[in-house]
Image (cartoon, rainbow, N blue to C red):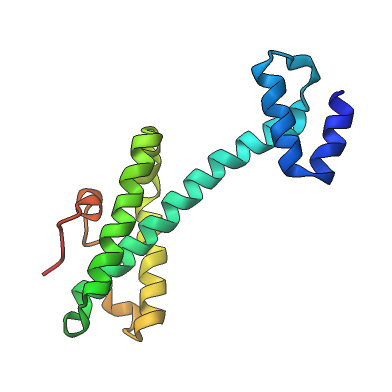
Length: 147
C-alpha cells in the first residue's frame, strides 16, 4: 500500500493527503507513505518560518519608511504595519516556539528590510543604520510608530 500511496503522491497530491489522513485516523501506520509524509511535515515547518521572516521584513521595511520618509506617511503604511504585526502575533499563538526563531532572525530580517527599503524609496542604503533602530518588541507593538 505504501508504494502505491507514494505513486499517488506524484499523481494526485490532494487525494494523497486525504488517504494519508484517513490512514492516520484509523491507526494504519504501516500503510503510510512515510518518506513523503516526512517531507511534507518538514516543508510545513519551513513554510511557517518563511512566513514569519516575510512578515517581519515587511514590518521592518515599513518602520524604516515611516521613520525616514515622514512626509509620505499614510494610513496605508499604518495598515500594513498593523496587519503584518497581527500575522506575526497569530503565528506566535499557533506556534509559540516561533518566538525564539523571530529573535534569531531579527537582525538578518532588518538587513533585508534595509536593502529592500533603500531600493524601493531611492533613499541611499547608507542613510539607514547598520543595526536596527527598532527593538524586537517595538517591531511587534501594534501601536508603536517611529517619530
